[in-house]
Length: 153
Image 1 (cartoon, rainbow, N blue to C red):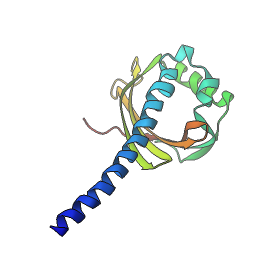
Image 2 (image 1 turned 90 degrees about the vertical axis):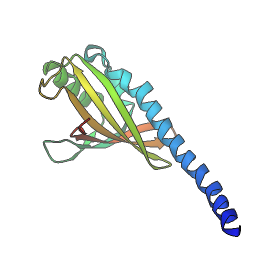
Image 3 (image 1 turned 45 degrees about the vertical axis):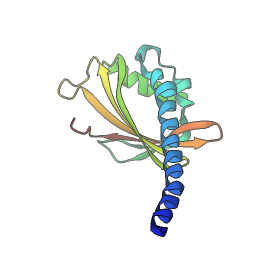
Image 4 (image 1 turned 180 degrees about the horizontal axis):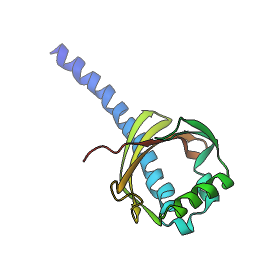
């Protein structure tokens, strides 16, 4: 009987902690989907100043084809990125799915699966990115960006 009471007590302590963690991940994912993703719906209308506001001043970029680097967040940097995407033929980015994993109460890993319209690579119409987002007094911001291989679905 005492073991059952202790187990119930332990569960009563653990369940709220798991729920709080789920809330952090859900909050970050909602921010990503409602605030950041819409900025990329049409490459022609992406505002580099708005994109810049969603990233920290210096972030880590971990591309798939070169070694990682620190990137200074600036309007000019986003203008070059948008131009590179546009010159590559991309018109729209469509978010297919996200999954958020709580790291701690102030950091969440967001896994995103995207599709370019039209597909830049017909052999790989989907692409995947991971974003490490941090919670600051001003709200959520992207601190690290990872290009990753998409999991097989």
